[in-house]
Image (cartoon, rainbow, N blue to C red; front, side, top):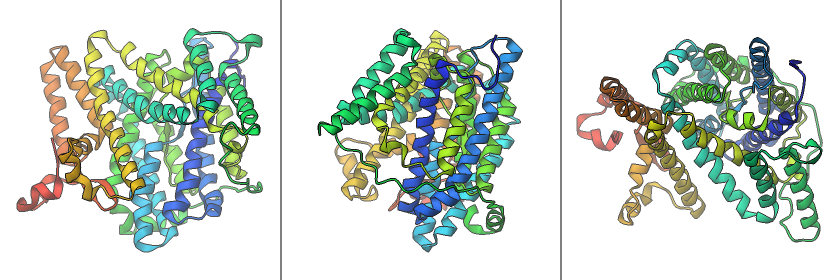
Length: 503
């Protein structure tokens, strides 16, 4: 057994490319969206936000690499795969669009918006620390189909569909690398010279892209001229964060922060369950503690974006990745962020040639939900996919309306007249991760004729609906917003219109 911590295998190189692109995409989103909607300049993003994000990503990746290495040594095997880790995409969008952007629009104070994001990230991290002490109990009580089906829903929609569309939008660049990935991994083919399939696909796709662009047969690179490299050290933001804790501004957004913190806890439990189904069992408490501490570190060093375990462990494992891909990813991502080189990578390696790796991850996760659950629970897995489909559809609708320059609020009745029950889509999408677990668990218990357990889970669903963790929403001029509140707080005469809690 070769158990050296710093070893790198061929599978690690494949896993590195996939996780690196995933992490890089999050940094690119931060680099693009913060100036666009929060008023934070690109220079401030590079000097204040990305260094803190880099520090949290580096620490988390090294911890989970070390965790996998310890399991490998204890169980005397070489095939343990570290949990993938990085910035939480859902929290990223939620904190930007539902906390930071509204504050900037109201006050025109970019610094205040940044501090509010730090506050949200800190509270999310603290919640995950607390969740570390109850996570094992939840994992024992929830059927595997419930934990895996919601991950599968995210994988087949928010991961796979977007990447498929992007690949087919520029097929000359994306199709060939995607086919290399899918064929080599699905058939477990070994390439000449033992080259990793992911590495070969990226090199082949990059060479093809440069050749086609030279012949004017493919779109030119869209990135701007790279800015000069400069080192940006992480800086302590605890003083700004502490002062904001006593401001009512941050606490007024608890309706967004609390569901996202709960989302992170449940998502981490699902990822751990997915890893166990693939053959690697990691302890719950240390994993959630590391997640929470990573988010707290990010907030204290200037990043408003929580970090978490990523879905996709079975995909990395199928590639043959061990723990080396994790520490390598953390090191490279940290270096790129600290040097201000986030936007430079895509000037040389087209994004389209890398998306096949992420598509593979999404497909493997979806398949695992059916394969790793008892066969009789296939119906429960299918039911658990539905809320994620609704959430994905809502995002597509809102994006389309935004591009068309039309607000959702004034379009609600028009959708209903044309047979699209948009209110049902929105209601099902609110808290979709929690709803997916609840629905799948109830169906699994009913299949097993455990009706008392099913009734208890339905009672939990009713409570979550009553307090607005699921189904509750408001449609505002800014779009759909979660309505987190106890339903009896509304005046009786205005109950229906104010809360719109649909069950």
